[in-house]
Every structure is written in C-alpha cells, then in structure tokens.
Length: 351
Image 1: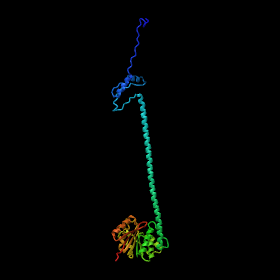
Image 2: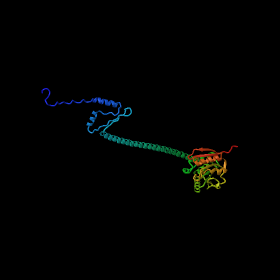
Image 3: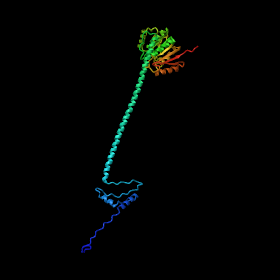
Image 4: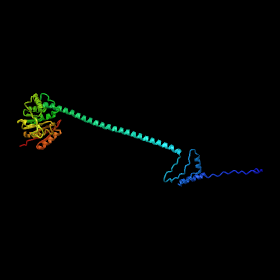
C-alpha cells in the first residue's frame, strides 16, 4: 500500500514521446538529391508543415528540376507575389516606352536644328558668293567706266573736236571702239571708208578723215529718221563735207538675209579700204551682219580691213568663222574693247 500505489487503482502509464526523425538528415538528403538532379524530390514534411502555417499560403506541388547544365533553375512563386511583379513590370515597360519616345523627340529636334543650321550655312554661303560676284562686277564696271572716260577724253583730243561727243552708251559704239577706228584711219590713211550703221561713229570717222586731210565716209542707214539725226550731227560738227549718210533700206534681193539695198549705193563708194561693220542690228535676223562681205566684196580694194564691233556676241563670232571660211586670205586679229572688237585684213601681194 505504501510501496507503489493504491490498491484497486489501475496503473497509469505516461506515454513516452516519440522520437523525432532526423530532420537535419532529411533536409541534407533532400538538398543532396536535388543537387544531383534526381527527379520527383519530395519536400520534407517539416517544410510542408511550416508552409501550411503561413497565412495566405498554398501548398506548392513538387517541381521537377532539370539538370543545371541544360537550363537555369526555375523559380516558383505564389499568387501573392506574382501580382506585384506584374504591376512593376508594366510600370517599368511604360516608363521605358516613355523614355524612348522622349529620346526620339529630342533626337528629331536635334536633327531639325542641325538641318536648319545646314540650310542657314548654305544660304549664307550662297549670299556670300552672290555678294562677291556683285562686288567684282561693280568693281569691273567702275574700272570700265573710268577706262571708257579716259578713251573718250583722248579721242576728242586726237580727232580735234572742239565740242564734246554725244552720248556713247546704249547702241552707240563704246569710246574704246571709236578710238580704235579713229586711230586706224590716222595710221593707214584710207581713201574710201564705208560704215554699216550710222551714229556717233559717223562723227568720229568724219573727224578723223578731216584731220588727215583726205578720204570720204559713206554711212549706210536703213532707218530714215535715224539717218536724219546723223546728218544733223554732221552739220553740228561741221563735218558734212567729209561724210555722206545713205538711205539704204533693208532688202533680201542679193543677200541671204535682209541687208542694205545695193541699188542705193553711189558709184563713188569704191574701192573700199576700210569697212566698219556695226549694223544692221541683231534684231533684224540671225547673223544679220554676215552679208557685208558677200555684197561689198566686188567693191573692196586689193588691200582692205574689216573692223567688226560687238565681236563677243555669238552671232558675230559665227559671222567671223564664215568669213574666214569663205575668204581664206583674210587674217584675223582682235583688240581689247568693251563689247569685243575683231579686225580682218587682206594684204595685197607684194610685186
């Protein structure tokens, strides 16, 4: 009774606690098997128990992990963490799109500024080149006007005029051309001079013939009103005795293009030693001055010279080429003049 319990009471035995499995050993084997790539690994029971105790968690099925040598280890996340990641990814994507859009707009703006700068630079270069050409042209015009003024003053002194010459601009011969033909008369002393087209050059040639004391000028003019103006100029300068203005309307009876009518030429208009070609105007026809030698060649002297004004124009260049082709014995030379000046000479053979 005193030794171990009450009589009649059932013996109460306390259950012994069960031995826990070696969890650490299980976890170590689990990791070792996963590292070796063995499939269908079951997560230890303790881990599953803890996962079930977490609020809002779900049981995760076992995952078969392929070998690490062929594919990276996959991550398994629950729905509670997947939703925030999607939102973050969408936000980052929108921000990336916005950054790209802003970058493209900035790039387009920079390209626009660059294109504008290129246009401005090109426009400035074009303006600079235009200003340089205009500056050069103005400088050349000033130099030419000064040179023409010098020729005019020398011309009036050389031919002995007591009053200034009329205006030498527009259709009139330039002072350097007028001085050349006056100087030619003074050096070669021609007896008969024929001029195609009358005007200021008629006064200069008549004054040069008067100064040398011999010779006569025949000026062919197709415009009656202009012919009368030239006659008045000769009277004003007292030169009517040294020049005759001939009314010669344009006709195509002899020449290939309209030219001065040969029927109006006086018989005394030969032999021609100097022929000055400054008409008809280019508006009459193309190469309107070509018939000069074609019509007047029978009246030319054995030695003569043809002085052509406006020799820089294309039509006059073609006339020169045709004259040289038709008359191989002509010698061509050029002199410096504002509008261009060409001289074709034929020299009589020396006996």
